[in-house]
Image 1 (tube, helix red, strand yellow):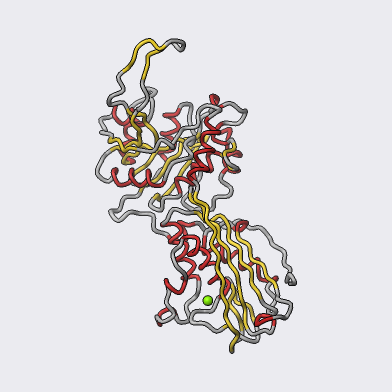
Image 2 (cartoon, protein in one colour):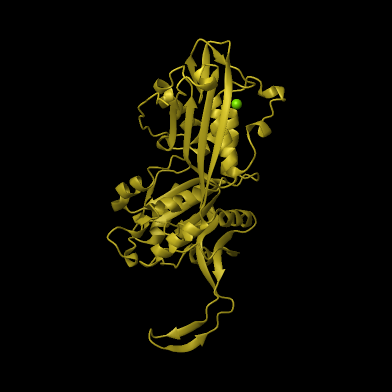
Length: 409
Ligand code: MG
């Protein structure tokens, strides 16, 4: 086989899932943002770099936290409060995230409360979930439980019941057992109506343990929502190893493949990955016959185990006649998002003798980036011939292979 040969340019794409799909509001008009507080110095976790920027399974802790928050489709915006010394660290930590729901960072203040106040001032939703930057293992299901409860409660907090025996101690001896009945360990997110928690923070300068204490001091009732033991806060050096272990156990990595063929017919161009390439023939098909985009769409449906393009868009239905294939790909992306997955890689191989594909791969990758919201440096398009063998070699049509890698953590 011959490589048709092409050079790739890497370009960042600003189109994100939010921009593609647009809908981040629940039916009742609630508009919930997540405010991530990450302005601390994290000295207890060791290492020279603040803990939220240290590596965890190949990415900074804070990047995992931001991605976990963006994984819920009903979150309309995510903002991070950072220390003024950490601007470059933050930019680097989130540079691979192209979701437009991630808003510009807010600079923190001299205390955690001051940082939260600065962050709340930038928020714009009806509700806000305040979350620790050092809790990267937040589960989508737990965000969902908070969003459901906050519809009918002024305050909500994720917490887990204390199950260990408790002892009063000077650090050497177990001196006196303590009752654990009714004790819960508070986690984050802690969620409130934005106007309520703003008022609560404006009413006090007293240092508080967390936003639940600030809210309660202002008279806001806070309801416990049972969370997950895995939602740990990275605090001590050994917590990195624990978080890495939990992350590995929880990760669902899937690969799907797709294959498609369309034959040549009358026409003056072929459409491949959304790019029209002038040619002396066209491709025959019920839709726009974009054989390349069909394979990527099928690869995504395959990874989700949700059938194939023909089941979602039956050729027997006239409404798909001549349809632009980005409709199909957008449906697959919508399903990825609804199932809580992230696409980490797309790879497409186009198989034909003619037309030449190489000069168009950069435009194809850009178009796929715009449709899917996947970073362009995670999208590959390449081409090959079949050495003039078989139907592709005889110039009877174009085949394509697609592979999609999806991750849910
Ligand atoms: Mg097809």
